[in-house]
Each structure stands twice: as C-alpha cells, then as structure tokens.
Length: 465
Ligand code: UDX
Ligand code: UDX
Image (cartoon, rainbow, N blue to C red; front, side, top):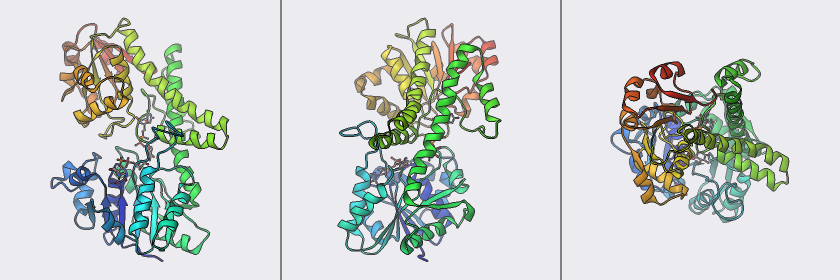
C-alpha cells in the first residue's frame, strides 16, 4: 500500500484549515502543509497568538496549537508544497458563476482548473489528488484530463473526498464524523491503492465501518444530495412556519411532533429566517444547473423551489418588520442582533442578515448591528457586494457596535438574526427600558422565550407563531 508521508492542501479556508489541522493532530507521522495564495490569511494562521488564526471554530485553536510547527505548516509557497507531497487536497472555493453561461447557477471552476494546471506544471513524482471542494458531478474527469495532458508524464489518481463538516461544530464533526466518503477509481488496482491510502489516513481515528468507498461520481453527487436534503428540510419547516402564523399552530410544536417520527427524525427541523452559509444555496443551484443541462426540467424545478422558499422566508421576515412598524421604517433605528449565518462562526456568507438589512435599508431604515464575532469591515463588505447602493451610503446608514445594549439603545425594533447563546442571557428588561416605545422584538431564530418578553412589554413576534 502507498504510505502517505507528505500531504499538501491548497486552500487555507473554512474547510482546508480545520480539516488539515485535525489530520495533522491525529497523524503525527504525516507532514501536512496548507498553502494559500492569500498572504494575509497564511500570516494569520501562523500568528504567534493562536487565538488570532483567521477562522473562529470552537476547539480549533487548541488543535492548531498542538500540531503547528510539529507536522502542520502554513505557507504561501504552493510550488514547494506540491513538489514534496504524495497526496494533494484541493480545497479552494468554487463560487457560483457571476458571468457567462450558467451565470447565477453553475459552479465557477476556474480556481480548480488553476490548481490542476499548477499541479501538472510542478509535479515530478506520482500524486494522489483529492477533491475536497464541492464540485459538479464529473469534475474529476476534467481534472484528470488536464493533469494527464499537461503534466510531466507522472501518474495521477483522482479521489473525491467531500467534506461534511458544519461550521461552528467543525472540529467535533471532523473528530467524530457520521461517515467519511472516499470516491475513487475502485475498479483498477492503481485506483484502489489510492483509495486505500486515504482510507489509511482517516483510519488513524475514524472507525473503519464509517469509511465509505464508492466510485468518484457517486461521491461527488452524494455531497450535493446531502446538502440539498438538509436545505430542503429547513425550507419545508419554514414553509410550515408561514402556515402556522395564519392558523394559530406553533411551528415548534409541529416540528417536535413531526420530528419524533423516527422515520423523519428531529434534526434540521428548526424554522428560521432562512438558511445561509457557503454551501446550501450554491450546491442546490449547482444541482439545478446540472439537471437542466441534462434536460431534466422537473428535477431542476423540484430543487429550485427549496431556494425560492428560502428567499421568500427572508423577504417575508423583513416585510413583517416594516408592516408591524406601521408600514414605515423610514428614519427608524432597527437593531440587528447577529450577522453570522449561524452561531459559533464568524462566517457570513449568504447570511440571512445581509438580505434582511438590505431590504430594511431600501425602506430607508437606520441599521445598527452587533455580532460577537464578525468584524465591522466584513459587514460593510457583505452589503457592498450586493451592489444595491454605494459603499458610502452603506457606511452612513449602517452602524456596527460592540455590544447588544449599545445596539438596542433608542431603537424602535430589534431583529434577532443569529442564535448566539449570549443573546439568551441578555437583561431584556434593561434593553426594553432603553428602547423607544412601543418596543418591537422580532425573533428570526426562535431563540427567545415569548412569554417573558411579552411580560416585559415587548411587542413580540417570532417566526412561525
Ligand atoms: C470550501 C470549498 O472549496 C467549497 O467548494 C466547499 O463547498 C466549502 O468549502 P471554503 O474553505 O469555505 O470552501 O472556502 P474559503 O474559506 O473561501 O477558502 C478557500 C481558500 O482557497 C481561500 O483562502 C483562497 O485564498 C484559497 N485559494 C483560492 C487558493 O489558495 N488558490 C486559488 O487558486 C483559489
Ligand atoms: C452545511 C452542511 O451541514 C455540511 O454537512 C456541509 O459540509 C456544508 O454545509 P454549514 O453550512 O456549515 O454546513 O451549516 P449548517 O449547520 O448545515 O447550517 C446551514 C444553515 O441552515 C444555517 O444558516 C442554519 O442556521 C440553518 N438551519 C439549520 C436552520 O435554519 N434550521 C435548522 O434546523 C438547521
């Protein structure tokens, strides 16, 4: 069997960073080098104070502390790391295309292709190339084509090893995964050897029965399917939340009753202001695009509805705020508690908060934001990216503060957009006293206790009740 001694990972992001840190911690005899073209990011990963690493994940700094400079390295020297490695993980981002054919739907594979060309140019020994980024089905084939035709005559095996970690629980998900999926060319001896080499890496800490091997295409499609199913559950319960609001049913009670059916299960049934994150929307759009390109229009429409429902939920929440505040928020101060797409992460990609803020800004509201982990520049960058108004205007109309009490002082309304635990512990009586009356509280995460807040005097609205 091929014994892996040197691993290189291209992309030091939310997936590459934590995944490699855990591999390095669990496999002390393997050297792991994480490379990235972003110098700032690499500098932050190497920061002397391990609390300054660029990604906030509970438990991650301890893992990095243990392995960094022992067998875990962060570098910008991509060529050197590729040259040395037996196994190369590609973990660069694959955003939705913003131009040309497939605009707004297909995955943009330009970074993946650049990586493949760089690997082909540099490699002088055989390599196992592992797709860690989520990719459209049959991308491995394209990768192989580039590597075989532009390379230096060395042999490549391509594996698909999709990541199932969720942000906020990444370290735990990596340490105790439900399963690890490894797709490869299992019908050939060389392919099987490559798959076994990666199985061996994970077997350092994951029980063998959880290491699933499949052909490459099943592995690629399984990742898209898993994310589509998870997102579909959120859209399903969110669809019910609107019906609950009309009928007097309580979505939490419905969710509990439905989730206790062991065939359905209780996870991913929490209604919210809408799912966010870097994966769900992108992966479903990708699935829709692939289905359409094969002429499977019913399949495409079926999955697209999950996204349409999610867009509706975000819009509906923002519209409810305007409507409740006597149909105008012009000049009114609205405090947003939370900007990250979920708790315990500083990631804001596709966060519902961005869209709610944008909607309220279009209605001329003054927005004040507090999030425990998201940096001020990130909040402005997220709004600027939408291109709805000038960056100067976003800075004039949105204020970012460093505490919930500051954010809510003199506000007309509060919208809870991320379920950070600390929001549950706030002194809501004090907050109420600091606000203009009537004081409105909109809970987009169903985080807060309705009765107590109403007893304090808030006009209280929660998704689905
Ligand atoms: C990853 C996957 O790539 C994505 O497909 C999957 O769906 C989720 O996980 P993530 O780690 O969250 O994305 O992305 P990001 O945090 O943006 O990290 C990607 C890194 O790759 C960035 O730091 C970027 O600088 C780096 N990169 C990108 C390179 O080093 N080289 C490139 O050519 C492009
Ligand atoms: C997801 C997948 O879970 C993970 O396996 C994959 O590798 C990447 O995509 P992530 O996006 O990090 O992970 O977070 P996840 O916990 O799945 O949450 C996604 C969004 O759905 C969040 O905005 C979250 O708040 C929302 N959500 C989740 C709900 O609104 N209700 C729920 O019941 C669960």
